[in-house]
Length: 339
Image (cartoon, rainbow, N blue to C red; front, side, top):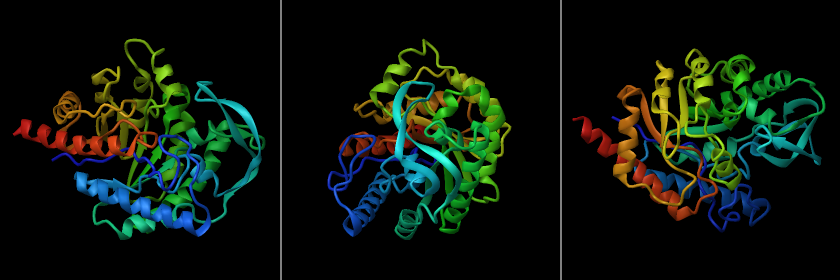
């Protein structure tokens, strides 16, 4: 009944990159690095299949960072002269590259890992891309002069890669937009407009992932300031419910998001986060089933997809694998409770 999946990223093995870091350094270079990325992708596909997930990903094993993995393939961006900038509404400072001219793709971005993943699993395959608004919040604009114009320019490039991924045999293309929980006032306008441009012409399933971030300390500290209820979703869900996107991926496990906000997504598939990525404690299958049960009060069973809250890139490999197993086992328990 419940098709299980994950938000996207998984930890990198120690022989590929530094472990338990959001932005790890590679262990190898050149052909050796390319081979290591391939091996890590295959390893995590097998781990997901063994856990019983229905919709798998490449685990983002070929990317150092979920945004910069795309930016590295874009002309018009200066990585040599980075500037310090507050991102996610100044939640933390980062050294970011500058957009210094018209942006365009140098070529394919993710063909290597997408084609490897597609060739080695018969499961449905999801592939993640950074969303336009989140990209705009992760670069310094020295050319376009407008966040909206820059978002639409990036959306065009994302669309080019998304269409190519669809041709590679990808079943679900997801755009990651953590910035939607920060710049809520812009989501109904250029946020959704740029997302629509990014999915133009796609016939595969489309998704947008909106969460409260990886389990890094800056995000944990930010959540502690949000009060007893986290109501950011209330500001953006109506616009997404009216959008052309097929699926909305969100955070529920160990969060202060009021369950009833899920009811604002009527007509959409909802990827309900039932696994906390900010904790090394592995959920019991019963806890996962309980979270699914709460969501079922507002999401029809045929539209509910148990998922992780966010990516698991900074976690330990062993904990991530155990959480995937708990996710699937919990979904099976939730099904049995409905019989």
